[in-house]
Image (cartoon, rainbow, N blue to C red; front, side, top):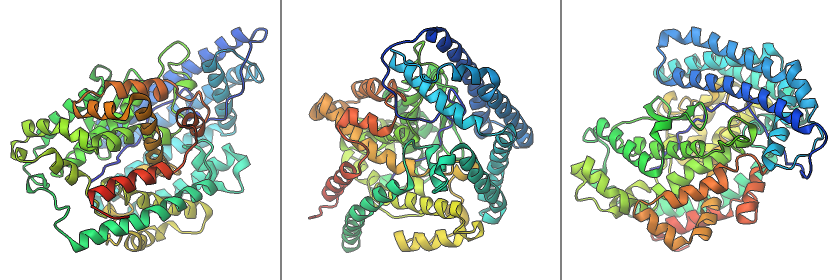
Length: 543
């Protein structure tokens, strides 16, 4: 069982701060201090408006009555127009131009200027009309997706999806004209700075080559010995898993991991996500069902995102400014997966957490930590991405990636998505998709225009292993695992805060951050080694 449910909806200092390698900053030039102060003031004004936009988005998905959809779409379109005008207006242009080529001593100021210039140049290429159209379509498509998912009828969403991909191609071409040779790179760049489809093809190819034989060995073991990883009877999903108790347990664990409820909320939504208005107002959602692992896993996953947000730089040069934002969605995802996979799915975590389950759910009293660990880490191919285990999950991501690229290139029609989806699920995972809601309508991402986002999940998984290995080396692997087994998460959390969360976008790219921590950039090799070691042990394989 595995749950990766996040949809990140945080505002940034500008609508979507993007990133480039940092210049070497050595000395201030004449009048640069006053020019920087003015730029900073404008950036903070935009950031404040973006925080309001973040609250509107959170309310839309969690609290808003269904009858308010049209009004909310208009509100968001108007807010997007105001933010765009503030971000690209004459005053901002002059402030940006005054800082071009200026060298500064402070690395945070350097990153703020670098990212502000980069984002301005992209945003200034986009008209107010296009910005309004984008915001309005995202609201309309979300409503259409909700209706289509409830009816399990892709045709109800298809017209808006056609509009969405056409719009995203237009946005990519306008904002990133240098990427016209591979239009999808423009969409990918919105989430993963510096990543290209060509490089992603290589990463995914290496993953497939390593995962396929491992997955085949696991499935062969399961076929030969069906009882081998059968869940403990008390851990099977059912009505005995009271959702109120699940919610209480989730809040207790989130608090123990370090989530500050005085600066956040934990609510319920159709698709769990993390949102809000920055480090001092971090909101997350989960969802509960008779499958206890769904809500529990989603809570830990979203807590990872939320800890990142609550750990961001809130000093005078960070709060509300570009340098305090995440390097990429993959880096952000690495933090949620750090807590979900490296912590929650570890044997040590269950040594600490099992007594809590016994307290909230007495029917599990005879279940040991090993029972929970083996049950939670079962490999079982299925239809739903957010329920996929660590071995099959990358195949779900590759499917979505392939569809996005084909739609972007005009090599597939939107109406063909359900058929292609079902055929690929059968071929890649051996599962039959019963309906659209459990197939191509299961994810929220395309309805919000997040085309190019899905690769971030697997990139995040890769980076999570690399970063956890760096933390283990710095803190001592044995000591760290002992801390996890006793519910002491502060040491790991604070290491991550100092080395990832507070660092924000300063390094300039995920590769640069990882080189700081591990000595090399993004590579799937540690990820494959981790999976092979873990599942060879769990399934007693000889590889």
